[in-house]
Image (cartoon, rainbow, N blue to C red; front, top):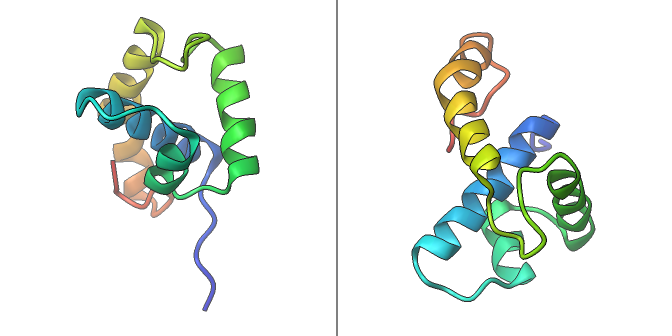
Length: 93
């Protein structure tokens, strides 16, 4: 049985949550730590970080911007419940 593929939006949320938890705990920011926490390969993480930076959700130091925190707030409060209702979200944050 294969694991279900995540939506791109879920990957972005997982990366942002991994960055947030790492910085919140005062742990050093390493790609390996973010890979492990978000469940991504190095290549997928690199592409995800590039995209998050391009749309302004993380800054050049890979810190989450105010826009990134607003995105997380909106996604968890508004979008995720709808996706969960139709079985499109795995329910993990």
